[in-house]
Length: 163
Image (cartoon, rainbow, N blue to C red; front, side, top):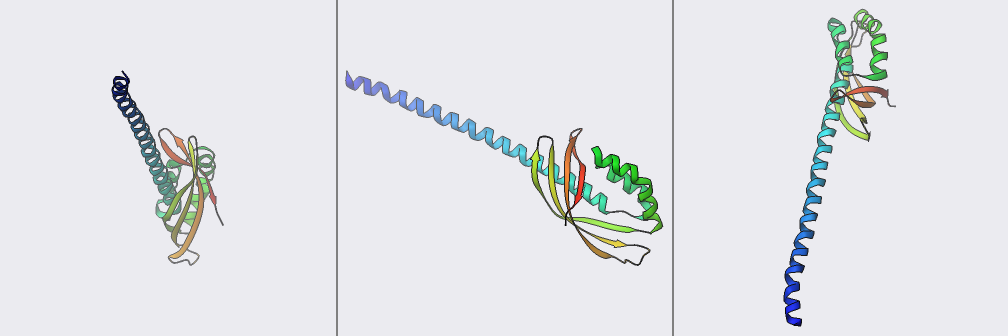
């Protein structure tokens, strides 16, 4: 009788172990999918931040109005409203000073995420030429950019220059 109980317990133990492994596999798979989704969203945030900062640092006197439109296309919220309110005077200054800048993001990383927004730290450089005598002068920029989800994409909602 005892041998029959031991023999009957073996399949029960094996089934229990199989169920435990199946549950662990499901948890691993869902954790992997969540990590992949987070990485994809991080890439979207960083790509949008890079595009927005590049637009902001790349302005030409010959295309100033279009360049401002590009910045606004990458912006939302208070930053977009403030930038748009100053855009006509910005265009005038760029044209009067014959400004030509070409910006490039050197590195960027997500500092924090909170719901539908993320704070991105950006290191960028630009070359600047203008009527005041700058001739392809190099400039370095460090920015803290808040990216906010807007209609399925991320846009700049706040930009701070970091010392």
